[in-house]
Image (cartoon, rainbow, N blue to C red; front, side, top):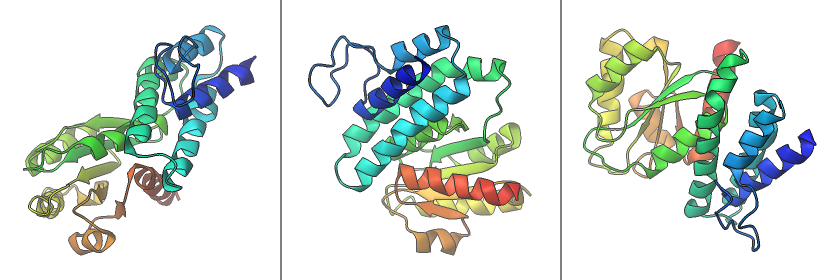
Amino acid sequence: MTEDILTLLKENVIQGRVTQDDEGFDEGMVGQPGVSELIEKALAQGINPENIVNKGLTAGMNIVGQKYEANEYYIPDMLASAEAVGVAMEILEPHLAKSGIKSKGKVIVATVKGDLHDIGKNIVSMLLRGAGYIVRDLGNDIDPQVIIAAVREEKPQFVGMSALLTSTMMHMKDTIEALTESGLRDKVKVIIGGAAVSEEFAQGIGADGYGADGFQAVRLVEALSTNVES
């Protein structure tokens, strides 16, 4: 029964179904339990929250990532699945805390000063939550000093910055310089992403890595986490 619920949960993440009212990508799914109902059902049956995350949510998003990279899924499809995971994590967070399961780490994310675009940032935030990280999303058009203050207060392991515009991308460099001036740069790993930037740009401004999309960003954080632990 446990495996049946987790399999259904994984499938509904892939389908991008938050509730039983959602259609999904396949026909005939309306009325069947979506991710939120399946999460509640799994918790009611005493399924370990960590298994719910790993075997249901993360397993589903891994397949979504494969479909996206194979051009079988597009951004709206990925957004639907990421939204389902985001809702699931909101339900699960208090249960994860009660069970004593530690998060993998904390990430602060923001779209930099002057840039109002946030779809990519939002996808990364939801995928990171689904992967077991605590995420504080500062929003868009965020001044470097706001990020500095959040790093001081939250003490994250990672800072993720996004920029879609070439006119705003240099604020990533400004933020890294502000982290250095504040004595905080060696306390966090900085990753960047967005249409305006590249791996070369990341290296040029002293970032720790670049993610071309949400799934690459999560893999990058996972890789950097391993390096920190080792």
